[in-house]
Image 1 (tube, rainbow, N blue to C red):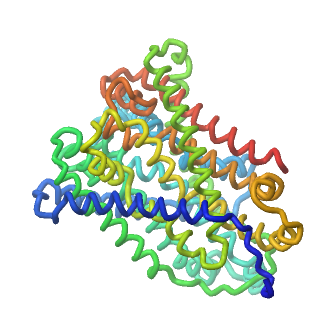
Image 2 (image 1 turned 90 degrees about the horizontal axis):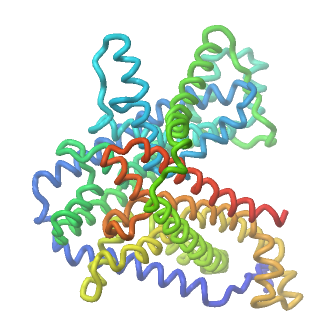
Length: 516
C-alpha cells in the first residue's frame, strides 16, 4: 500500500449486495417495460394525469422555494428564544407519516376545520381542501420545511468575512441582498426547486387522499387505479415507464441548472448577519410566525382531537400497529445491513459503481417497483400473498439512498483515519467489524436506522396496492378510517402512528449516540 490508502476490506458482501440491488431494480423496471409494450395503452385520461403530475410538481416546487426565502432570511438574521427548537422542528416533516400530516391539514382546512369555522363566522363561503389545490397545499406543507433548511444552509455557507466586509463598507439591506444574498440564492434555489419537484413527482398518499378526481390524478395514483381497480397490468406498466422517465428527466436537469455563487473560501467563522430594524423586523417576525403556525397548527389539532381517544381505538387498529412496527423494524435492519455492506465497498478503490448501484432506487417509485415485482412473481403468487414481504423489501430499498448519504462520508473518514492501523494490527473479519467499524460508525448507523424505520412505519404506498383488510398496516388503517368519515378515530390513529414513528426514530438515533 505504497500510496497510503488502505481499504477496510469488507470482502465480497458489499459487492454482492450492490449487484443484487442493481439486478432487483433493473429487473423490475425491465419487467415493467416488457409488460408495457410501449405507451399505446395510455388514453386521454392517462395523459391528463401526466400533465397534472408535472403541473402540480412544478407549482408546488415553485411555491415551496419562493416561500422558503423570507422564512430562511428571517431565521438567518434574527436570534430569539426557541429559534434552535424551531429550526429542529423544520426537519420533522421528513419523518412524519404523510397520512398523519394530511389528517392535520384536513383538521385545519377541511369542511369542519378551523379555517372554515373562521370563514363561516365572518359570513364568507367555505373552502374545500380536496382537489388540485389541496394536493399543492399538502406538498407545500411537506416541502416548505425542507426548502427552508436548504436555503438556510446557503445563508450559513456565505463566509462571515463577506458580512464583515459589507459592514465596513456601509452596506445597507439592499446592498447586502444584491451582492451577497441574490448570488447565493441563484446557486441554491434551483437545487431546492428540483429536489421538491422530484419529491412531488412520486407523491402517492397526498393524491390518494386529497386528489383522485379527473382533474387531480397523478401518475402514481393512476398506476394504483389501473392495478387495484382495473387490473390492467399493461396500462399500469406503461404509466410506470412514464413515471421513471419523468424522474430521470428531473435528475438530469438537476445536474445542469445550478449557478455557482463564487464567494470564495473563508475562515469558517459564524456568519455575522445583522438584522435590520424597522419594517423589516416586523416582516421577519411575521414570516417566522406564519411558517411556525402553518407547520405546528395541523399537528396540534390532530393531537388535541386524537390523544384522548387512543384508549378507545378498536382492536384492529392495535393489530395493525403491531404489524407496522414489526415490518418497520425488519425494513430498518435490512436497510442497515445493506447500507453498511455497500458503504464499506463504495469507499474502496474502484467502488464508485457500488455507490451508484446503491443510489438506483431514486429512479423508481415504490409503486413502480411493486408493479414490477408482481409482474415477475405473478405466475406463483397473488397480490395479497406478497403484500407484506414486498412492502418490507421495497421500504428497505427506498430508504437506502438516504442511509448511504449519511454513512458513506463517515466510512471514508474511518478508512482514512484507521485503515492503515487496522491493517498493521491484522484486524480482520468479525473482529474488525466489532472493534472498529460498528463503534466508529454507530452514530450515522443509528440515524440511518431511525430514518429507515420512521419512513417504513408511515409508508402508504405498496401496501395500498396489494394488501387486503387482514393485512392492513397502521397507515392503511388510518386511510380507511378517514375514508369512512370516522374522523375522531382517525385522529387517534394518527396520533398513535405519529408517536410510534418518532419513537422508532429516537430509539435508533439514541442507540447510535450511546457509543459517544
